[in-house]
Amino acid sequence: MGYPRPVDERVEARSGGGRGLLTAASLVVVGAGLKAIQSLAIPFLISVLLAILCTPVVSWLRRRRLPAAIAVPLVVVVLLGVFFAFGAVLGGSVKGFADAVPRYQERLDSLGNSVEGWLEERGVTVGELEVGKVLRPGALLDLLGKGLVGLLSALSNTLLVILTLLFILLEAAGLPVKLRAAFGDRPGAGLGRLAKATREVQKYLGIKTAISAATGAILAAWLAVLGLDFALTWGFLAFLLNFIPSIGSIIAAVPAVLLALVQVGPGTAALVAIGFVVVNMTLGNIVEPHLMGRTLGMSTLAVFLSLLFWGFLWGPVGMFLSVPLTMVMKIGLENSRDLRWVAVLLDSPRAAEARLVEEPAAPVS
Image (cartoon, rainbow, N blue to C red; front, top):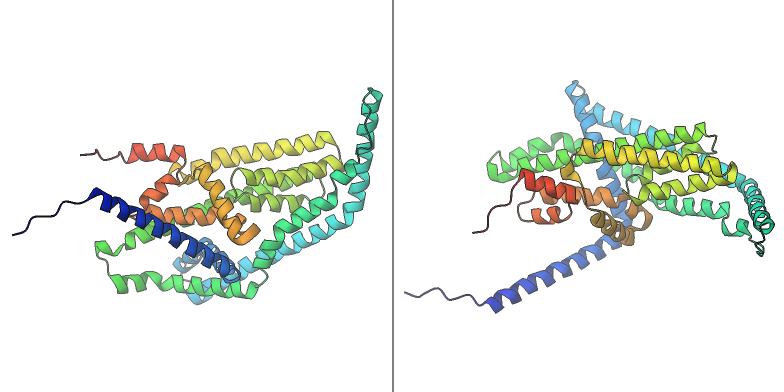
């Protein structure tokens, strides 16, 4: 009878290094593939995220004894109407902003001359500041246009997005029955983890969308009260960029503050900035964490790296989808036995502390 051969630690190290190299190579291949299929992947992912948001509504309608063949098209038609309404408002606002650029430029030139005169009265000799050339409203329009062009191009094939959304919702209605028929109700089938992951994804996207909508609506109302032009446009921009934590609210505030400075003056610009800070601090740092729970928090580094990664792959649309996609991946990893540690590494410090309280680490034997 033979004896078990001792394991060579060097062989294990080489094996572990080989697995790490294989994993890294696989990630590169997957990233290259995602970049290659960008034109198809982006509309599909938008449809999937919309389907996750709409599934609870469809389920509610079905519990009211409405057939899926009626409930699903009804939800899709309502969603399409909302999209068209937003598109009409946004398109009209952008056109109006383009027409108002010469007026803003004249006001900016006047502000530059006033600053130059104020400095010269105090003995500060300066050349021509040409503030109007440094801060041109046209550049603001270009920045806004570049930020929206990717999203608009992703939604340009509206028929593909809507059809995909329609089929996903119709398929989702019978998915639980198919899963039970395919895998049964045995404990090892993993259906419980799949259902839990689906609920958590719906919770995250639903709460994030509601908080973003509230942020945009409150800021649009605040800017309208202050008399700022195109308040709906800046509110809609705040709604979109609120999906990007931390830096999204800052980016959304910049054009509104600059426009307030040009259109009215420094006092109104300060009030606009204060409004953005108060709304984002209240909803983003108090209300949202309370509703989401600490375990769904993601570290700032993970948010930043996901922004770089998805932005590199898919441009502005990738940046917009970066945090929702990464959060969906995190929730999926959370419900996987083998890769749960990756989800833990993506946690925020507060979420990691909550894990230690709820799930104490097993002692090392």
